[in-house]
Length: 124
Picture 1: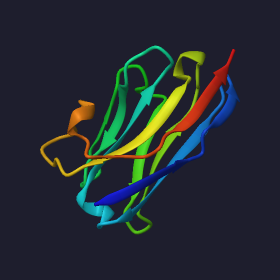
Picture 2 (picture 1 turned 180 degrees about the vertical axis):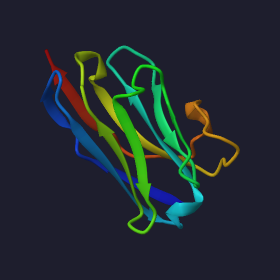
Picture 3 (picture 1 turned 90 degrees about the vertical axis):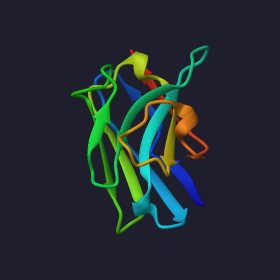
């Protein structure tokens, strides 16, 4: 098993930047595909980005070109760098991990492990 703890959320003005971190503990982090989901009030949980064990990445169209996902297996930490933030990016952001290794799944049901979430609020 792996435990995930997000940090780095906060309040930022439109056009600003934030970097989210996801600290993993437990089983070796490097064996997991990891990613990020978000959920805005009244909306379904939405896939944002994922990164495979071999550092292949995938992004939702809504964040492509603005968000960058990365991981440092030596530190058991994943990251989501967000730039050019917009009010529609406001949501609780969740770090996730899965044993699934055939590509980067976009369905939340495939992800075995979830962090507690961190709030990102973008003001206009």
